[in-house]
Image (tube, rainbow, N blue to C red):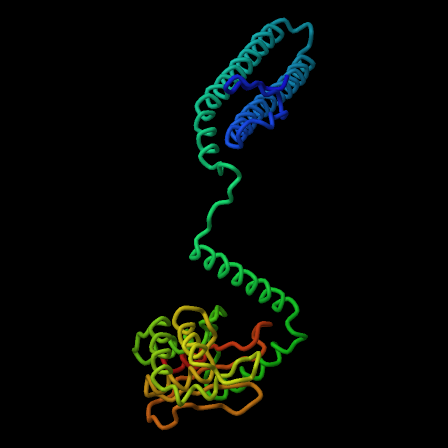
Length: 324
């Protein structure tokens, strides 16, 4: 029989809701019916398991009886006692499980109804999502899409282009007793590679600090950077508003860094930065500074999403020889 609920003189049977009831009352009735149905489902599942266990026990008992000769009175007597003990234990176990289920249902029913009713949106009004939450959701969706595209590119491997590039770079770096040090592809790769190189010089600037200083330097030298920034849709040079937004993104997002940011960083750090490539000669920015350069590896085919920067480290064999 379908559960019945009475509210303010109205009786509702099953799913036949009275169309004249307020929306929040209908929601309450839906929750109540759901809880009752769930309770019945759990009890039915338990009873089915009990029936199955009883059948299995009977089969076990029959096997025990078949294993004892009929003329062995002593073993037949012991068998009768063992069977009675097994049946009593199962009956007690089933009784306790059923009582525990009913107890749990009583304790959780009120809590479940209260939680579900508290989550109801009266008059079917959708929950209001804050602008900050929308930005977080959008960022998470973009990051998920990026990871999926990376995974696809990893499988396809760009018809071997990445492998060929990696082989060339390995040869170039080996000639200088270096090898690639992998940097995560998360939009911060250039800054993370710079951060890694600075650690070798006992400098502990973080990615966040590098981004902040880069944005401030570009904003303070508009005439040096603005001519190289154009709107991809129109081809026109950035407006002041677009330029300001570009600098804000450097600080507040995982915006990818390129040659303009490398130029700014070389001036900030007063250090040359060398970029090694597979198919082109190395590029050095900040050559006017006398320090040893920070060395980055620029990869066009590291992932299907475009360019990527890695750091470098000494070859393992070379480092071992120097220590011996």
